[in-house]
Length: 380
View 1 (cartoon, helix red, strand yellow):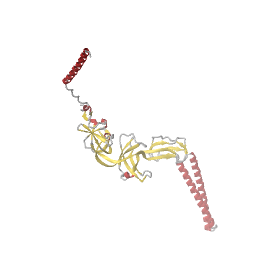
View 2 (tube, helix red, strand yellow; view 1 turned 30 degrees about the vertical axis):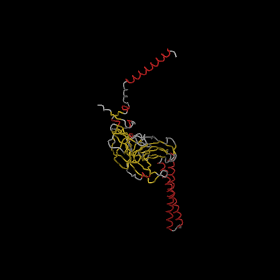
View 3 (cartoon, helix red, strand yellow; view 1 turned 90 degrees about the vertical axis):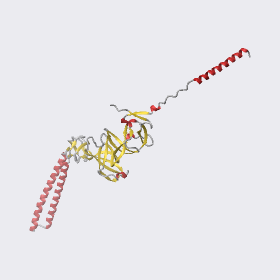
View 4 (tube, one colour; view 1 turned 180 degrees about the vertical axis):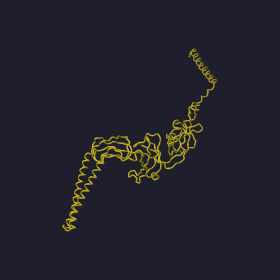
């Protein structure tokens, strides 16, 4: 190997050794690494709530009862029908019109029946004339028998003739009464007071016997027919009250058990219970109603039903305790409608909480357990 090549290789090796030593010295003199900044998870594990986002567990009076539902119908209703066939006249009432019991609402053309009445009267008059003739004949024969001019058989014949004439006259009078009754039935009256709910015929239309003309309902009292299981119906008594929510009505109404059907339904084995509701403004036949039939009152701890969450296998509430959220399993029970601070909510009985404990409302949403809670200061 040439001397020049040896010198070059020695220089390269020396340079490598110098660079390695410098790097080692720099690492020895470098300052210790700065500790990492604290994680932001602590700050993110906190929520800010207002006073409206919590509600205290409240002890309140609650009604234990049975759920009932059904369709309202009027206690009094009548289908007004034509009692005779003929052309309908003077029907002026329409749906929604108020009527009084005995009020004339329509007529049926009486022309034909008036002719029949005259015919029946003339037949009755003719029968009466025959009675008078038979009576005179009987009186004469009776006198002749007394004087011995005729036999007793002739008197018996005149007696039979007189009796037959009287029977014919009575039959004619009965036919006249039937015709007059039919003539009276051409005037159609309402049997009850109320309102017209259906108009089923039109003026000028020929209605048949028992043809439907109008339907009248009385909304002074409404009824609800509820089917209860036999086991539950055994504890129901007339006079028990229920709080009912009716579609279209903001405020609940009170219903009372009027009567209980003594027979269970063949198919479902349920028992029909009839609840009465006093007529009020806005209540109509056919509206759907549902509520709770109260059997007894209790005092229980309750929270709004919306505060009970069901996104876990067991229902729970989000309890605020020591400025932290804790998930506490509860056992829901009886429900009731209560108004607090002008807001009507459904409250549910819960077991497993203490009175006065703060529970998150539905407006707070779902919050992870262990989350720190900070309440917004109230504005002045």
